[in-house]
Image 1: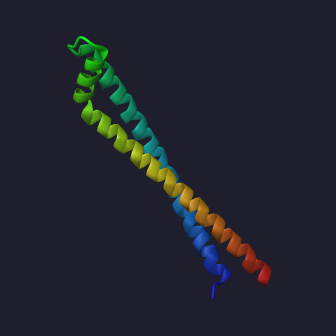
Image 2: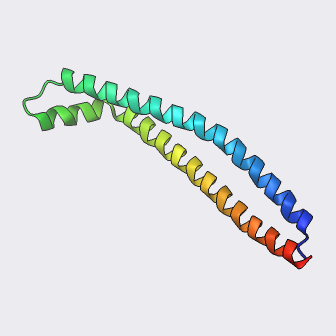
Image 3: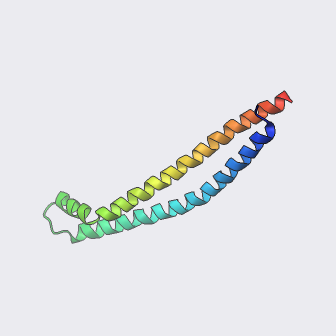
Length: 108
């Protein structure tokens, strides 16, 4: 049987995890921003240095030169999105537990 104190304990646990997730989210957002700026700077420099006749060829050469920075940017974005999704999951779980808790209070 589900007891109100168990639900409240789980609410507190999830709230704590959500708070920790916010700190991780801030770090990952900053890291993603730096990775994005780094990639854009390196790509722009590579386009300017490219020795090609057409814009498409310059872009292709720049993409090859900056492939590692692009990968780092995409990984940083993926980690940020995963952390955002974790935050949404914590919020959904908390909402469900609050509903259960309200129903348990009504039964008492």
